[in-house]
Length: 363
Image (spheres, rainbow, N blue to C red):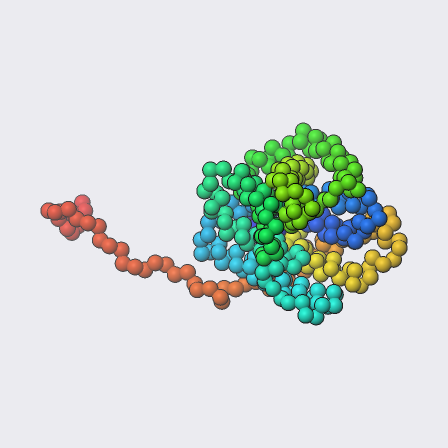
């Protein structure tokens, strides 16, 4: 969901493919959420997907943020491409929730991100701090230490969803540290083959853990005490979860095709799919889409999966992007001053005593 490149020629099919496949997993994961009760298989798949889909998005976002230098032009794009959509969709989701949850008095608060909007405020904060991380000698260990400290600090509260911002920070910082050659290493044939048994083992472990432990560690939205664990679990689980998630991110990225496919162009619209599909995911329960009994059986679960993938695919298409561009990628040139060249007088060069002036002096 990183901001699109400036021109179509500069787009890399591999990363567009990765973003599209990741947004499909995000939508499918949200569609599975109401199906988890009573289905160990769906719960295992849900945990498996949540272990890596957002980390993969965040790593790619960090990779494309390497050039952020806090210059006026990039700050303007950060405001129009991240901050403004956050304000618009935070307000829209709050109003929508008032209707679906029958909470007419629910306040609109830009300090308490609702549902999907946490990613926008997180991306805003991460990008603002990018120059700091790029200037550090050991950015990833420091980011992991920050995330570990967050897990033992329940007092952080819900403001700006800082718990998630800090706990997901290492994935963004890792993306800042990556180079094109790292992705070429991931895409080697031996890595793709090794990823198969690794993913299968991860699925088996996820199935085994469903009745034994919570998968909320992968959500990164609560501290260890809030999850009912001793505080010292937090730093330990930070490293364990980071290792597990990054292993699956490597598996996922190794399988992403590098050539242009039918869905490559959709990778430019993943932010649209992300922000818009949430209204359907939230409204599905209000509209009773999960009420029929057959939906909670294997045929229904498969149907829900396919529908979710199809819906988010449509939301990433150019026609939808044209309709909603005014709120997702607004043109706000009117809000900023035009950059003008510096017209201050250039001081004359200092002349040493006895230096002659005029054309002969320059000969």
